[in-house]
Amino acid sequence: MGKTLVAATSLVASALALLVVALARLGGEPPVVVACGYVAAVTLPLCMVDLRERLLPNRLVVPGFAFGGASLVWLGLARGSPPWGVLGMCTATMAVFGVLAAFGGVGMGDVKLAGMLALALGAGGLGLGAVGLAVGSAFVAAGIVAVGEMVLMRVPVGRGLWVGRASSVGRVSLAGRVSAGQILSAGHGEIPFGPPLLAGFWVAVAVG
Image (cartoon, rainbow, N blue to C red; front, side):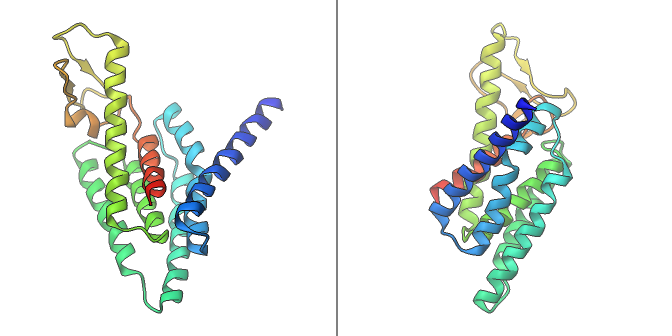
Protein backbone atom coordinates (compact mmCIF):
# COMPACT_ATOMS: atom_id res chain seq x y z
CA MET A 1 0.00 0.00 0.00
CA GLY A 2 2.78 2.41 0.95
CA LYS A 3 4.76 1.74 -2.23
CA THR A 4 1.66 2.16 -4.36
CA LEU A 5 0.88 5.50 -2.73
CA VAL A 6 4.43 6.72 -3.25
CA ALA A 7 4.36 5.66 -6.91
CA ALA A 8 1.00 7.34 -7.50
CA THR A 9 2.18 10.51 -5.80
CA SER A 10 5.33 10.54 -7.93
CA LEU A 11 3.32 10.15 -11.13
CA VAL A 12 0.93 12.96 -10.24
CA ALA A 13 3.70 15.27 -9.07
CA SER A 14 5.78 14.73 -12.20
CA ALA A 15 2.77 15.27 -14.47
CA LEU A 16 1.80 18.49 -12.70
CA ALA A 17 5.37 19.80 -12.78
CA LEU A 18 5.70 19.16 -16.52
CA LEU A 19 2.28 20.66 -17.22
CA VAL A 20 3.29 23.81 -15.30
CA VAL A 21 6.36 24.08 -17.55
CA ALA A 22 4.17 23.79 -20.65
CA LEU A 23 1.65 26.34 -19.41
CA ALA A 24 4.39 28.77 -18.37
CA ARG A 25 6.12 28.59 -21.75
CA LEU A 26 3.21 28.10 -24.16
CA GLY A 27 0.27 29.69 -22.34
CA GLY A 28 -2.92 28.25 -20.94
CA GLU A 29 -4.99 27.87 -24.10
CA PRO A 30 -7.12 24.69 -24.24
CA PRO A 31 -5.05 23.04 -27.04
CA VAL A 32 -1.91 23.37 -24.90
CA VAL A 33 -3.64 22.02 -21.80
CA VAL A 34 -5.13 19.05 -23.65
CA ALA A 35 -2.18 17.97 -25.82
CA CYS A 36 0.72 18.82 -23.52
CA GLY A 37 -1.29 17.75 -20.48
CA TYR A 38 -1.55 14.24 -21.87
CA VAL A 39 2.16 14.08 -22.66
CA ALA A 40 2.89 15.28 -19.12
CA ALA A 41 0.68 12.54 -17.70
CA VAL A 42 2.38 9.71 -19.61
CA THR A 43 6.00 10.91 -19.61
CA LEU A 44 7.08 9.16 -16.41
CA PRO A 45 5.09 5.93 -17.04
CA LEU A 46 6.47 5.65 -20.58
CA CYS A 47 10.03 6.19 -19.38
CA MET A 48 9.64 3.59 -16.63
CA VAL A 49 8.13 0.95 -18.94
CA ASP A 50 10.63 1.56 -21.74
CA LEU A 51 13.60 1.39 -19.40
CA ARG A 52 12.30 -1.80 -17.79
CA GLU A 53 10.78 -3.65 -20.76
CA ARG A 54 12.20 -1.91 -23.85
CA LEU A 55 8.63 -1.24 -24.92
CA LEU A 56 6.39 1.78 -25.53
CA PRO A 57 2.84 0.46 -24.92
CA ASN A 58 0.16 1.43 -27.43
CA ARG A 59 -2.24 1.98 -24.56
CA LEU A 60 -0.11 4.96 -23.47
CA VAL A 61 1.04 6.29 -26.84
CA VAL A 62 -1.97 5.95 -29.14
CA PRO A 63 -4.45 7.97 -27.00
CA GLY A 64 -2.08 10.90 -27.39
CA PHE A 65 -3.17 11.15 -31.02
CA ALA A 66 -6.78 11.53 -29.88
CA PHE A 67 -5.85 14.29 -27.44
CA GLY A 68 -3.71 15.97 -30.09
CA GLY A 69 -6.52 15.63 -32.62
CA ALA A 70 -8.98 17.25 -30.23
CA SER A 71 -6.52 20.11 -29.80
CA LEU A 72 -6.29 20.54 -33.57
CA VAL A 73 -10.07 20.65 -33.88
CA TRP A 74 -10.08 23.46 -31.32
CA LEU A 75 -7.35 25.29 -33.23
CA GLY A 76 -9.20 24.87 -36.50
CA LEU A 77 -12.41 26.27 -35.06
CA ALA A 78 -10.57 29.16 -33.43
CA ARG A 79 -8.66 30.08 -36.59
CA GLY A 80 -11.42 29.31 -39.05
CA SER A 81 -9.23 26.95 -41.10
CA PRO A 82 -7.81 23.45 -40.64
CA PRO A 83 -4.28 23.35 -39.17
CA TRP A 84 -2.79 21.59 -42.18
CA GLY A 85 0.72 22.66 -41.20
CA VAL A 86 0.56 20.77 -37.92
CA LEU A 87 -0.82 17.67 -39.61
CA GLY A 88 1.93 17.84 -42.21
CA MET A 89 4.57 18.22 -39.51
CA CYS A 90 3.27 15.16 -37.66
CA THR A 91 3.11 13.13 -40.87
CA ALA A 92 6.63 14.16 -41.90
CA THR A 93 8.03 13.25 -38.48
CA MET A 94 6.46 9.80 -38.59
CA ALA A 95 7.71 9.32 -42.15
CA VAL A 96 11.30 10.09 -41.14
CA PHE A 97 11.14 7.76 -38.16
CA GLY A 98 9.44 5.16 -40.33
CA VAL A 99 12.48 5.17 -42.61
CA LEU A 100 14.75 4.78 -39.58
CA ALA A 101 12.59 1.88 -38.38
CA ALA A 102 12.82 0.24 -41.79
CA PHE A 103 16.61 0.18 -41.44
CA GLY A 104 16.43 -1.15 -37.89
CA GLY A 105 17.41 2.14 -36.28
CA VAL A 106 14.34 2.57 -34.05
CA GLY A 107 11.26 0.58 -33.10
CA MET A 108 7.69 1.16 -34.26
CA GLY A 109 6.83 2.38 -30.77
CA ASP A 110 9.37 5.17 -31.29
CA VAL A 111 7.75 6.01 -34.65
CA LYS A 112 4.34 6.42 -33.02
CA LEU A 113 5.73 8.32 -30.04
CA ALA A 114 7.62 10.74 -32.29
CA GLY A 115 4.44 11.45 -34.26
CA MET A 116 2.41 11.95 -31.11
CA LEU A 117 4.98 14.37 -29.69
CA ALA A 118 5.18 16.31 -32.95
CA LEU A 119 1.39 16.63 -32.88
CA ALA A 120 1.49 17.91 -29.31
CA LEU A 121 4.19 20.47 -30.16
CA GLY A 122 2.12 21.70 -33.09
CA ALA A 123 -1.00 21.93 -30.93
CA GLY A 124 1.06 24.02 -28.52
CA GLY A 125 1.81 26.52 -31.26
CA LEU A 126 5.35 25.34 -31.97
CA GLY A 127 6.67 24.66 -35.44
CA LEU A 128 9.09 22.48 -37.34
CA GLY A 129 12.06 24.07 -35.59
CA ALA A 130 10.78 22.82 -32.25
CA VAL A 131 10.35 19.31 -33.65
CA GLY A 132 13.90 19.44 -34.98
CA LEU A 133 15.15 20.59 -31.59
CA ALA A 134 13.26 17.79 -29.83
CA VAL A 135 14.57 15.08 -32.17
CA GLY A 136 18.09 16.47 -32.15
CA SER A 137 18.11 16.62 -28.36
CA ALA A 138 16.90 13.02 -28.25
CA PHE A 139 19.77 11.77 -30.39
CA VAL A 140 22.28 13.79 -28.38
CA ALA A 141 20.91 12.32 -25.15
CA ALA A 142 21.06 8.79 -26.59
CA GLY A 143 24.64 9.38 -27.67
CA ILE A 144 25.63 10.63 -24.23
CA VAL A 145 24.10 7.53 -22.64
CA ALA A 146 25.95 5.32 -25.12
CA VAL A 147 29.27 6.98 -24.30
CA GLY A 148 28.47 6.75 -20.58
CA GLU A 149 27.87 3.01 -20.90
CA MET A 150 31.16 2.66 -22.74
CA VAL A 151 33.02 4.45 -19.95
CA LEU A 152 31.28 2.58 -17.14
CA MET A 153 31.99 -0.79 -18.70
CA ARG A 154 35.69 0.17 -19.04
CA VAL A 155 36.13 -1.64 -22.31
CA PRO A 156 39.86 -2.08 -23.10
CA VAL A 157 41.23 0.26 -25.76
CA GLY A 158 40.92 -1.13 -29.27
CA ARG A 159 38.18 -3.67 -28.57
CA GLY A 160 35.11 -1.50 -28.93
CA LEU A 161 31.64 -1.98 -27.46
CA TRP A 162 28.41 -3.43 -28.78
CA VAL A 163 25.24 -1.73 -27.60
CA GLY A 164 21.88 -3.31 -28.38
CA ARG A 165 21.23 -6.27 -30.64
CA ALA A 166 24.10 -7.38 -32.84
CA SER A 167 21.77 -7.50 -35.84
CA SER A 168 20.93 -3.81 -35.73
CA VAL A 169 23.72 -1.85 -34.12
CA GLY A 170 27.03 -0.33 -35.06
CA ARG A 171 30.29 -0.81 -33.24
CA VAL A 172 31.53 2.02 -31.02
CA SER A 173 35.12 2.99 -31.62
CA LEU A 174 37.10 3.77 -28.49
CA ALA A 175 38.93 6.41 -30.47
CA GLY A 176 36.26 8.71 -29.10
CA ARG A 177 33.52 8.48 -31.73
CA VAL A 178 30.04 7.00 -31.34
CA SER A 179 28.74 5.59 -34.59
CA ALA A 180 25.49 6.86 -36.03
CA GLY A 181 24.31 3.27 -36.25
CA GLN A 182 24.56 2.85 -32.51
CA ILE A 183 22.63 6.02 -31.75
CA LEU A 184 19.94 5.19 -34.31
CA SER A 185 19.68 1.73 -32.77
CA ALA A 186 19.04 3.08 -29.28
CA GLY A 187 15.31 2.32 -29.48
CA HIS A 188 15.94 -1.33 -30.40
CA GLY A 189 18.72 -2.32 -28.07
CA GLU A 190 20.16 -1.76 -24.66
CA ILE A 191 19.44 1.97 -24.75
CA PRO A 192 15.69 2.59 -25.12
CA PHE A 193 14.90 5.62 -27.25
CA GLY A 194 11.58 6.58 -25.61
CA PRO A 195 13.08 8.49 -22.67
CA PRO A 196 15.41 10.58 -24.90
CA LEU A 197 12.47 11.41 -27.17
CA LEU A 198 10.37 12.55 -24.24
CA ALA A 199 13.28 14.53 -22.81
CA GLY A 200 13.74 16.19 -26.21
CA PHE A 201 10.05 17.11 -26.26
CA TRP A 202 10.30 18.89 -22.93
CA VAL A 203 13.51 20.64 -23.98
CA ALA A 204 11.64 22.01 -27.01
CA VAL A 205 8.72 23.08 -24.80
CA ALA A 206 11.02 24.75 -22.26
CA VAL A 207 12.89 26.65 -24.96
CA GLY A 208 9.60 27.57 -26.54
